[in-house]
Length: 187
Image (cartoon, rainbow, N blue to C red; front, side):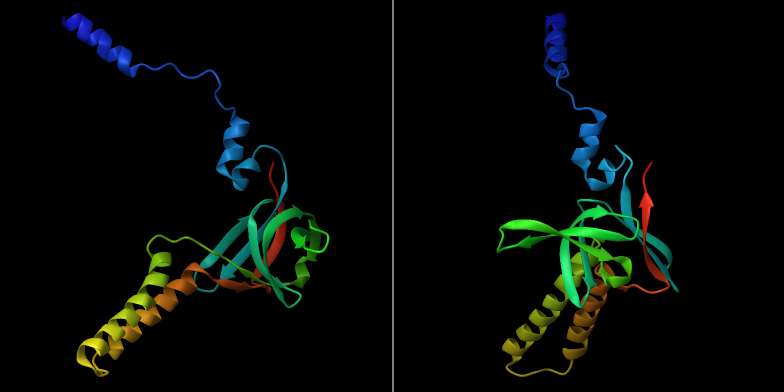
């Protein structure tokens, strides 16, 4: 009886691996653009940031990544299509022709790069804290039927900390001699 029970238990948890497993290339492509660049040599856009207080940091943008930047006096938030030695190309929708057309930007035309980082708790606090401060102020006004001066420092602290956290999560990096765009290759 116990032998039958053990055989049934092991047969329940021993499932054969399916024959159609993914190759390494397919797994890397599924993970995202940074991993798919490992499959074949390619160029990518690198933003080297050298802060006075924070030190050096490199942000990488591969083909297929969304790039949010300001150039030629306009803001763009498009997918990075191609990278050459001195420029990069994005695809912009042409509504008249009903197709995407490539637009090329030289590195010296780019004025700012807007980053969108996901920092746990900090990014969420950047949106929640100003709302919490506003709700706290409104709740106090509704409950007391007047504006209480003791509530203003708490509300201000919530709003200012929310703005600070939003700024930390979404920095706008101005391109200058300390913050440079360059092209690097994967091998």
